[in-house]
Image (tube, rainbow, N blue to C red; front, side, top):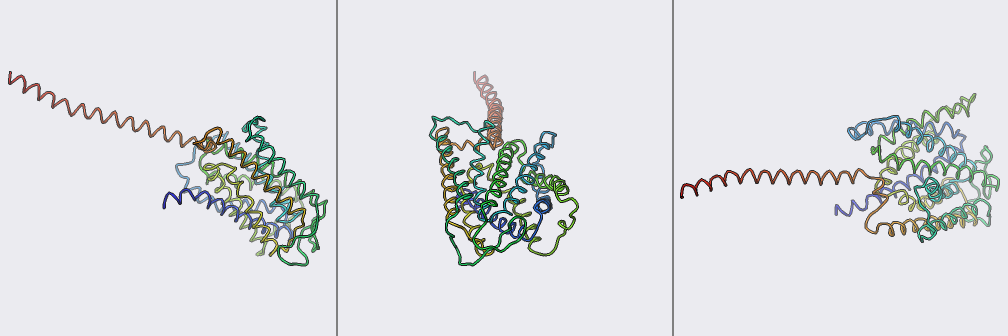
Length: 393
């Protein structure tokens, strides 16, 4: 039973992560619809994440944190710029122009973008003669094709739940409109989200590398949130200069959104993602992304009264197909390279290899000590036997 729970733990964690993120998308859309500044919203979100995660990092990572060096600090600062500042702000802007379901679906271009960036930075070798590599290229093309379909194809409305109208932020003003977002806003929002995905892909690649030298996930999360708060505050003060009203906090849905997204989206999500990355790799997380889209589509239809048209449904389906083609290609690569070992896990967790080597060295030392003890115990017996023989002679 214990072994089954150990094997099931990453699956439980990734399902919890995706369902939790779906709630974050809904609350974020509600806050932005009610006039929240995306720049200030990101700052408050990171501040809440820092306050929430810091106590856990201080006590649970005690003795686990490696010594802070300038190189590690510089990488942490870059991580906090890529995800909390650039990615979250671009995603929030894109979310303003679109719907929660649309934005969640568009964000599933992230695995394809991660594959492209891994190729550019030579972390992913592309051999066109390899079946796995060919499949991943096809999946990447399909994913971007689905994104384009979502942007430009309309079609009749598809109602998950009957409603006459729904809420969407259009051109910076709150409007109740019938039908859906217009083509201009769909393209504008999609471009913002895709640009954010490039930043998010860089974050995933760099986070995987940093975990090799800084294997303290809670502390890593806290540092990213803290630095993201400081960097995001600078950006917010520049972008919202002269508009002090946007910094006001009231006991409303905007406050709830900040607290929830700070604790889960920028706190627990970073930590859970880091743990899963170390154990299973980034593509394992991506495999469960469609669960996020389905949950967001259902919840947003009920709470935000959002609707989808046939073009966007078709685009979502194509994106999901492309995503799983990429994952299948990745699994083929792993099978060809190492049928019996998860290569990503070996790359991400060299500490486990070192730990095994240390255990072998300790076992060798114990064996040598045991042999010495045997020799020590035999010597008196040998002397006794020799003495008895001499007496008899």
